[in-house]
Amino acid sequence: MVARSKRLASLGRIAHHRRARAGQALARARAERDRADATLGLLRMHFDQYRQKLANTPPDSMEQLRQFQHFIHRLNQAIRQQEQTLQQAERHCRLLQETFNQTHSQYRALDRAREQALDEERKQDDKQLQRLLDEIAGRKPF
Image 1: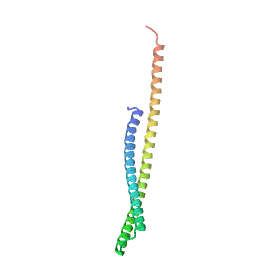
Image 2 (image 1 turned 60 degrees about the vertical axis):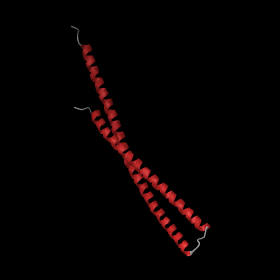
Image 3 (image 1 turned 60 degrees about the horizontal axis):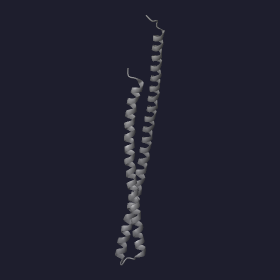
Image 4 (image 1 turned 120 degrees about the vertical axis):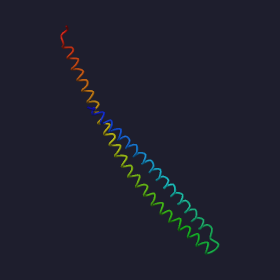
């Protein structure tokens, strides 16, 4: 019969791998969120620069003004779309953080259970050894 601590150790290794995979997925999601945030920052910076340029340098013609306004409009749309992408990435990070927390809790619970089982097995071994020593000590010499 396999000791309880060994069975729990096997389950612990599985839980450890699950936790590691969850951690890796979380790290990838955070990196994606950070990229989305950086892209949004760049888009906003460009939007402000072009808007300021329009305010400081009037266009030479109505056609140029229309093109510039069209460009600003498209840039503003890209910002709104990137904001949605960032929100989606943040939701994904929160979901994966919850998954990681759950797998980490499962791993810790199995590890504590394994440690308790090891302690119980050690105590049983100590009791068995003490009984054996008592039995040996109680024997009469030949």
